Length: 195
Image (tube, rainbow, N blue to C red; front, side, top):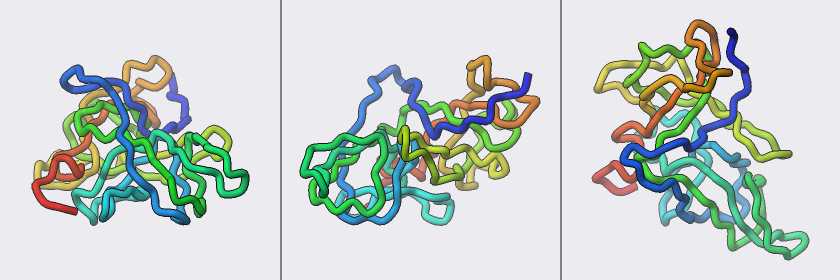
């Protein structure tokens, strides 16, 4: 049966050591000019803030985690606001992002091509920075074409299995879901150097 082509970003589904899945608070600079959607990987930036990540294969070691949502005082209504996505260019000084930043969280994510079990333990990048301003959900996916089993090759994430979701586990067709974790050397908490 063909898989549903319905990207949803990175969804936390477990923890390698059985730990709790929780978010940590980070800041977003006022007027930051890019939308950040729930399930979108984010980068750590100087002074403890975050920004939306794109394919980070050229910028090793800056992924802070995956965006869960944010809180800010709405600059138009002056009301406290929780949102599943950060609206670009929000002019508020109290923007707090909630990030799944534990490097041992297991995420479920959709492949943009035909993902297979042969890709388990391969390094892969992600693709896509869009999402819905209606429900806040990211459309990020695993970039299937970047699968590389070389231990020296970069890749933001490591595939550790194919999803058991009956609607998206067919490895014979495109868009299978996979379970992934952050690759060593690509996550801010797995580095020994500073940002």
